[in-house]
Image (cartoon, rainbow, N blue to C red; front, side, top):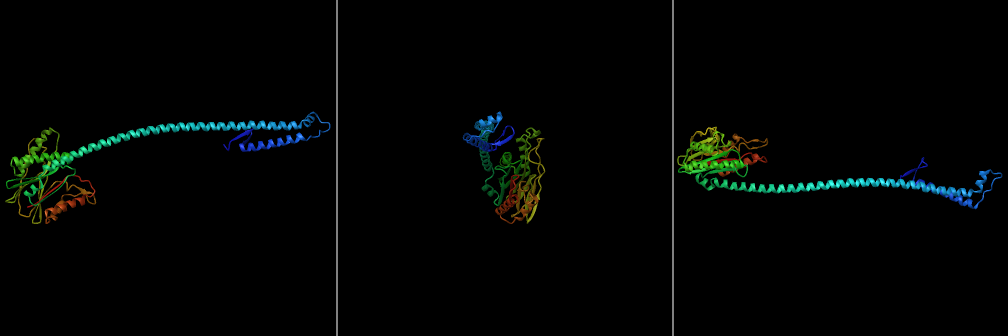
Length: 387
């Protein structure tokens, strides 16, 4: 408002301060002149004309009129200032009202957004709680499945009774595993095996239950001790259980296996394998017996495969190793590559003079050092036996 201006007589722009100064200045002059000439008479000139005579006879009235005129003009122009100021105030009020309306609109939008966010938050909290509850149920189920799978596997004391010097490095990728080990004694024959089922986690664990049950039937019910015959029985059983003949079920799962039968009196070892080989160390030299290149199960023609049975004469102190592909396939090291089978065999040869417990500790440490922060890619199983 300080810079508010009007134009006097339409030409002279002045602000309030300038107007008041001029108004007071001229009013005082006309007031002084009016008072002065009210008490002082001017001498009328000789032979004046009409207008001159009129002015000298009424000059005190003239200054009074000028003073009155100044007051009227002051009121008139002050009224213009007031109107202009009022218009500015009204404009500002209108702007403030518009801003208030915009703020109210924004407030309503913010309130609506807040309500929407709160609704979404409540939905997310509900979904989170639902997921946590479902996760707990799934985790509890898997943990219970682990207890069942652990109960199915042969207990440590029984393994030690059958094979006094042994170790089993067993590390599932998830809680439950598709890898499993099997051991059973029939008369003077100890049948033991390392099995790698298709997949891992719950699907692999279900396959492991099928595989363990069929191996138990083969040895404990059918009294089979020849590894190749056990594999043929297992091959037929998996195909039939999963209804794989002619692709009826659409399930193409199977398992890789290395299975041995050791005569505890003669130390004659029989071996048969489906993809999983047998490694043994004798006289500080490592030997590998190759497996057949067809898996257990997935026989679309319904005919079980015949597996090769191989025999090795062992002696006291010889070492046997069976393993799944999880250890060799684990990514790690400085370049993030697979561990591979050759370094695994070199590792087994390097620990041959250690006790079986120390061998397991070294193999486990090597695996951890190799994997570091990498994700475990598969179930891991290494079964070691000293004759």
